[in-house]
Length: 204
Length: 248
Image (cartoon, rainbow over all chains, first blue to last red; front, top):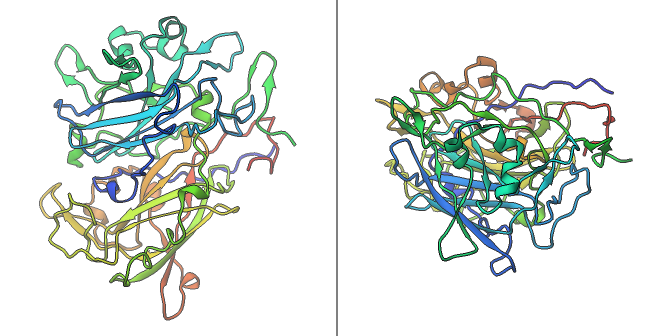
């Protein structure tokens, strides 16, 4: 084993307010092409600590395919994903602070312990914006995966049920394939519940 | 030679990316006003690195069009400003090059104005400069852009606030853990001392790593000045399963 040479990392800086000139992709929100059988939409509003929509944010998602597979060489089960499935979504928020992606539901994932426990279906999310000096990372889980969510080690580690609920998307009434996932960058500074309503963000 | 596909007794063996300490700016930074309502009040929750985190999107040539790495030849005429060549390598903290990774950049024009509707700085737009570019790193992790040196510009963060000249960089690396958006600055900028974004990085040596280096040998005589800037992303910790040269 060669001892690692530790080069010091390049620090993060804010994406600022003007990434709209460089980062939008016409197909960004389409993890799968529109009309793909089984496609779902996940979207919502990004809000700040005053509850105002954040109109200059970028939301990115990364996830497994419906079989829980990744087209990536570091997946020890082999690099493989469903045809036409990119795994990655990118959407800039609009003038109402809204984003939306089109994707397939991810499958469950084995964990490193091998004890048979599984991660519930989820998407990893990065949020970038003016005022964010580093990205914020969160996860999207599904409301109709109750048993899988209850067994999920990441959700289980969040003791407060109100906080845990911020990671679970909401089914849109009347649209079986639509889910809402709002992102609250900063919660309300009420004295008794400092940060109430704030989305759980992770240190990855 | 197998790398990656490893099934240890009873479980998956995954690369592990040590968490950076003292590198990235704290999210809460009152001197940068936009953080006030946008930085979380609650502490971040540690996320174990599992399959979703140690993998990530891998893009190829389909994301880059011919000419995307030369921001000076994308329009009918040449942009105004000081033409520069900007090159360097993307490495991980283990010193390994990160090949075939997508880099996206965006920047103001030579007058300090972005081609963005929200930029109201009363400086001229340049019809020959849109300020965005992209490229893939080569097999040695090297990238190269041709562009013009961006101008400094005022902003309303505090009285008489000016951003030092900078170019925004977006990088994917090869794993979700490596995703990075940052800004590159130019050597000797007199505006560093008053800029809360540059100074949001607490460690002076880490701030220095955001500044490119002028290199006369990269300069093309009678055409463009040369600058070099290497970018270091988080790298996986060495494991007994990984041998030198195996990681692409």
